[in-house]
Amino acid sequence: MTKENQHIIIIGAGFGGIYAAKEILKGGGNHRITLIDLRNYHLFQPLLYQVATAQLSPEDIAYPVREIFKKNKNVTILKERVKSVDPERNCVLVECGELKYDKLIISVGVAPDYFGNESWREYAPPLKTLEDALEIRSRILNVFERAESEALHPCDENPLNLVIIGGGPTGIELSGALAELRKYTLKNEFRKIDAERAKIYLIEAGENILPGFPEQLIKAAEESLRKLDVTILTKTFVTNIEKDRLEIKTAESTKYIESKVVIWAAGVKAKFGENILSRNNKIKIDRKGRVKVNNNLALDGYENVYVIGDFAAFADANKKQLPGTAPVAMQQGIYAAKHILGKAAPEFKYFNKGSLAVIGRNAAVADFGKFRFAGFFAWVLWIFVHIGYLVGFNNRFFVLSKWSVNYFLRKPAARIILTAKTVL
Image 1 (cartoon, rainbow, N blue to C red):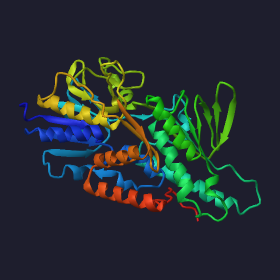
Image 2 (image 1 turned 90 degrees about the vertical axis):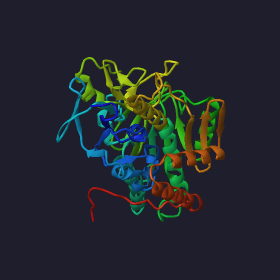
Image 3 (image 1 turned 135 degrees about the horizontal axis):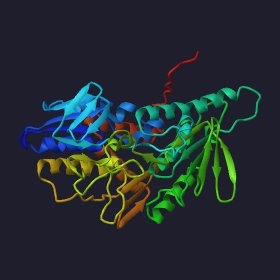
Image 4 (image 1 turned 120 degrees about the horizontal axis):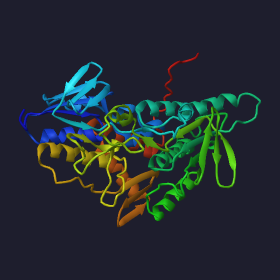
């Protein structure tokens, strides 16, 4: 097998895997690429919250993997579950058999971390997949529908509370989108209830929301959320979640919030490493289940196996763990591909292009190191960055069109409740 004619297996069709495959194809050679994923589409995770809050439809942020590589005859797509990886024998075991590789790139992402409280998932779903987003969307809309029905009966007015746990970018974006859904979209659509009655709580265990962002942007985000009537609770720990309420604890007291919709955006861990790679004692895994890699993003002792994206434990020059974001996965995917092709720098270095978080209509925060700003311009920049990252021209066109309609009419059309069973 020559260097120009290798079989390269890529596990995961997220940002890291897709960008790695594209870079290998761009680099020439006669490589065979096998791309494996449980789903047949590439998902643009940064916009999942817009599906969950009825602003976009699932097909707007998902793109068929086969469509991406339909012109590349040397790329094989497998919709498969990876059962194990054996770096000693250079093979990947999937449900339908065993695949040999010359080079392997693992880019499988992470899963929600409930910090040992897995029973909470039933009452506080995460937002990591399209299925999660649709479940959350149905729960949110059903709460308003049920409140309308309950208003027909002479009973006490039940609390209409929506709770987001986790004050990072996902929690911020969810809070802002939910507030606008309540304040503008659902306004005047119900006859018995006032949609604005719904209270939105954003709970963060740390000192501030948006940990890692500069103080001036944190304050700008807090101000924007408060204008949308979002209640921010920092230095607040969730100690229990039940069917219709959750328990929270601060330094001063323990309280309860009644809520039928709770969304988990608080933590992640890498389950794939625990279940697959940890069987090999030579491979080091950190406390979050991420695989430790060297400066080339490869495994020590197995230089033909690369681990990238959220699944990789890689620290920058300041010994700080790189965040689990799309730009990190993209850059690592490109680097791993170039390293396979013999065209990479001696070691991977992440170029931080900045951080963005949107809060709502005309409001966002942007951190580009020396340049930090908030408000309308940051919001416009957020739009164009996300449109640029979307895979597929159709996706870009339809998302931009829907955003334009939503901006002027404030009436997103994706307010369909999907459930496994329909009770008549």
